[in-house]
Image (cartoon, rainbow, N blue to C red; front, top):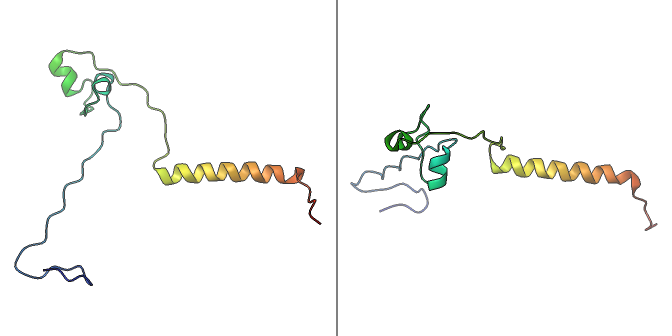
Length: 95
């Protein structure tokens, strides 16, 4: 039984083990991308291409922000810079 206030478990059962998080490969080869399957990204050729005798090619990756929060923050800064740049041209007609 678990205590709703502390989140701790009581009783004889051990706590549930956490699932191992899956590591993502940074770039899949063109063959694995076309098949939309997981690529092991081995160099010079991935496991799938090696087994099937395919030419394994990796495309140049486009740099992206490390995470969504940073991307949103960059967009907010760009909008702020745009608005601040327009301020000198604004006049106050509400006096």
